[in-house]
Every structure is written in C-alpha cells, then in structure tokens.
Image (tube, rainbow, N blue to C red; front, side, top):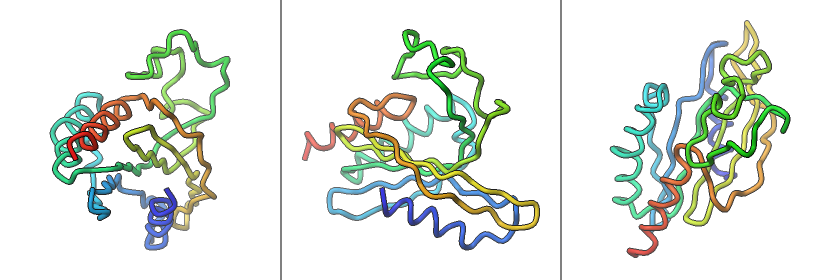
Length: 175
C-alpha cells in the first residue's frame, strides 16, 4: 500500500493545471515480485457494463498471465462519508453494491461529495483500501491530503473485489 500511495503522491508533483487529474492505474504484483503498472482508459469506469468488460477481458487474463499475487487499483472518485442511518444494511449485497439499492444517493451527485484518490489493493485473502482527499484551487494544481486507511476486509465485495480475489486465489492454487 505504501508504494502505491507514494506513486499517487508523486503524480501530483507533475501537475501544472487546476483541472489535472489522476489517471486510473492498475498495479499487478507478479509471482516473481515484479510490479506491472497499466494505465486504464477512464471510459472503462463509466458504466457497469464497461467495468465488467475491463475485468473479464483485461484485468483477470493479465493477473493469470503474470501469475499475480496482488492487484491494486488507483483512481480518482467522488465519495462521501455516510452514517449508518443512510444505509439499509439488511439490503446490502456485498458482491454487487449499487448506491440506489441501499437508499444512498450516488456520490457523484450528492451535495456532500468529496473528491478523492482511492486505492484498493487485493490479495488472495482479502483487500485493503486507502484514500486521500483532493484539494483543488482555481489557480493551482490539485494536491492530496494525508492518506486514510480503512480496515482490511477478509471478503472484499463490490464489482471488482470478489472477482479479483477469486482470480488471485486460483493463480496461487496453480503455482
């Protein structure tokens, strides 16, 4: 996690314009301890269908080809800090979470939204996350706040979590 956070911090050092942004980047730690970094076209993150395409056609085959031991994704996101009152926990499907399914406004349109760089790192046994808020000025390039880490998850959910974790487990079993 430290290496990816440092890389994301380093990217902001080369920004020149107020609207510069972090390109989504995938990091795959291979069986021989090399790290492969792949730029992800932002159009892959626009819809549920393109996210599935990214996973099935590119991420999962690359993890398998490189005998991946871990996978990380860095992207800028809209987020907000919700209270438990905002979420109907009994309706939460961790394998396919959609904001509208749990009664929460989509973060990109919520007035409480915060722009951040989000990092999710997956291993065969779970995942960990961290984020840094993006500070924007009308006249200066964007900067990041300190990183905040979330607790490790043994069973990551969401669109990417369970699929990537399963692929990493399969690679470990085949090695």
